Image 1: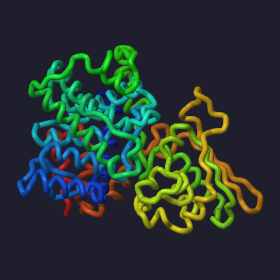
Image 2: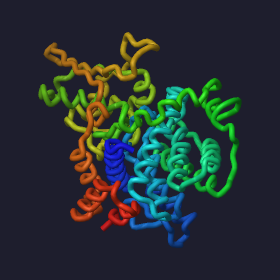
Image 3: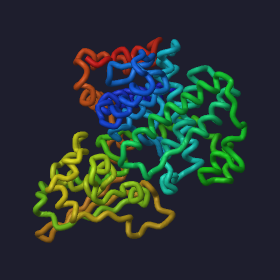
Amino acid sequence: MPSEELALAKLALLDYLGVTMLGSRELSVNILLSYKLKYFTKGTTGTHQIIGKNVKLNQLDAVEFNGSSAHALDYDDTGASTQCHPSALLFPALISISEDHNISGKKLLKSYIIGVEMLNVLSKCLPFLHSNGWHPSSVFGPLASAVSSSLLLDSSEKQLANSLGIAASLSGGLVANFGSQTKHLHIGNASASGLKAALLGKGGFTSSEFILEGPKSYFAAYGKNDICLQDFLPGFGDPWSIKTPGLNFKQYASCALSHRLIDIAIDLKRKNDISPSEITGVSCRATPRAKEILFYQDPEEGLQGKFSIHYLIARALIYGEIKTVDFTIEAVNDPKVKNLMKLISFEVHEDWDDSGNLWRPDVLQIDLADGNQLEGVSTYPKGHAKNPFEWDIVQQKFIDCSEWALSRKSISNVISLVGTFEDIDDSSQILKSLQVE
């Protein structure tokens, strides 16, 4: 595995640990934890660490909690042409395996990189799942988690094949739940389901040998009857998708499809010192996929604000920033923001056709009371693989996300461990460094 790919995997690991630490404070995962403690643990001591709490749960519950925490803020990575959130889907299961087995850091990182590749291949086979109402992370995630977990468990080819079949029957999640707490659970459930499938397959549990292709198969059920997986495998790992097209890290805790327009709004405000009272209209134009997913025009709850261009752009133009704390009921009902939202339109590019490029630049146009007009475009938002975050930016993001719970010494220790992760013999060390103080 080339060193550059391992370096990118370490960047993803540090980002994952940070957003999971901060996400563990969210209401959704605390409801989930209370449920697990009441109905599953029932006062007994668990075996696997959950991040952000000094609590242990059984393995699958811990993975589901950590995966849900990682996605609770919608601050976790995307990209690699996966339609998914790779790190939140893969790292919870892989790190939990390291608690039971002597797994080196390099082996864990390699399994993660191959899991990302699996997500990439499945995404090529079933593009545009969002348009059909499916959440790709919930559809592809269990299979990728099963593959990467099986590799870490040294499963045989037959065991891995059975794990894939099991995972396929544990997949599924709906776009209709975007903007609700259930979207967080999609990720945790997918990661845990993949691990469950890997453990069952390792233990001899069987599944269909023809689960992916053919009539009534996985691909057929999700809308494609004519897929031949072999057509998509020749490029597997050449190049590794973690590098090309690459992962995208988030600067804002909102849907990734909103980030281009947010970047434009903040940039125009800072360069032109715009006052909200000067604005008479705002036009946002993006791709059909963005329009389909950012569907809350007038959000009533904080989580809905993460999928509302009207809210995000109004807040960005008023305050010049989007913070992780900007997604509460109070924030989305800010009177200043509400008033400006009425002046914002959000449409697909007026000349878009079915052959359009999904990476066509988003356009934001602001009409001012003096008759002037401001316009900006963005193709690759900050943090995108083609406009990347360097180590120091992700490091600062981790510090910002974890300083509520960890001392400076512990934070420094985590950063150091991740920085040399491919050299450590026991990858479970990372959890010991994340103990809340």
